[in-house]
Structure formats: structure tokens, C-alpha cells
Image: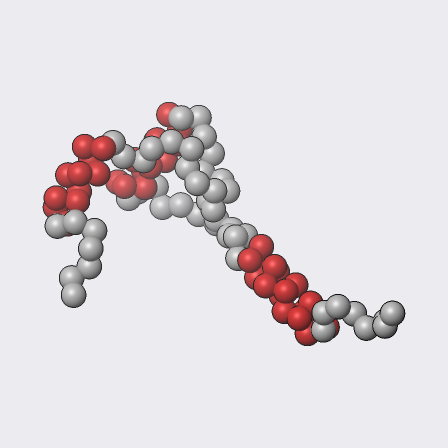
Length: 85
């Protein structure tokens, strides 16, 4: 038997660094919200109606943000989702 580790130290370091970056990038602090903007006020009202907190802001919202009709109307206005080439 030989006593060499199965992985080189730099490989373990790289793997740990990757985990560090992945987990730390989701820690976003929210200091203030400008409630005077109509879209922001509307979104905050949706959270209030669903008795849901806006925090943490990196978690997916547990309810639909727009109806199917609203989505289709917005896509018609924008001409679809594909960028112009």
C-alpha cells in the first residue's frame, strides 16, 4: 500500500473554492426598497396578499407573478422573447 492521497492538494483546494463561491453568492442583503415606484408597490402588495415575506430575496416566489393573459399581452408588446439579431 502506498500512503499517497488519492487527490492532489490543489484539486481539493479548487473543489472547496468552488463550493465557497457557489454558497456565498446567494447571500444578498436588502437595505431598502423604493416603494414610491408603481411596479414595486404592486409587487409588494402581491406579497402582502399572499402573506409572504420578500426575504430572502434569492428564493423563488411561491406564487405566480402574472397571469397567462398578462404574460401573453407583454410578449405581444415586445414582439416575443427572442433578441433581434
